[in-house]
Length: 244
Image 1: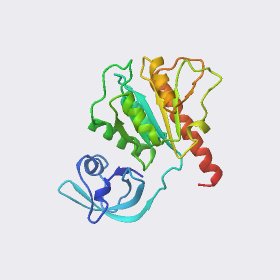
Image 2: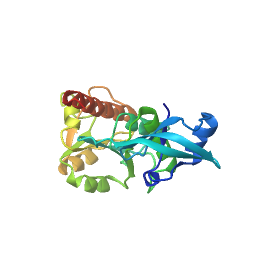
Image 3: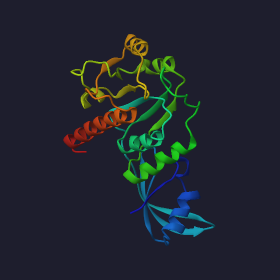
């Protein structure tokens, strides 16, 4: 069964797919009235719909069943140092697949360039495509911050604040339990050039705990994937034990 995205404000009669979602359903898949599809809204809502009719390149849908998936009780906020890299879009896709709650880009001392004031529109398209592929009804929010000071201010209300630092003793290696200790967990990763000693000092002075990812020097996207994977597996194991 194919999955489509319908923005939250369109979840009311008439249920209508248009734009590229409608083109894919009507032109690419050549769906006929009566075809059942799955639809998600990126805010936890899912539904089974039947294609009712096609009119002027728009697909009118009839709801069969609509339900909402609960928010995860342990959320990962991953703050990644800005780097000019073609792997950025790839990280966004993996963040959806591995159920991150929010991705935060911030410019560090060794960053190449700076993020814009607002996330790019094509990033949202990447998130939606990944959500449809992996059936995750919760799209992570993407946030751009102006620098370390704003990141520290943003982190004020977090009980679990972690900074991953390559100079941290390797015996203090991070675990999934560390990343999922509280309801909201913030993990900071430096850019490709790493974090400066001054940045780590400022972070630790503001309540961040330093952890290691082991003895290897990892690229920033590899470090991000390790964190995302630890969080995902911890969530999945907790859900399995609770019978979810």
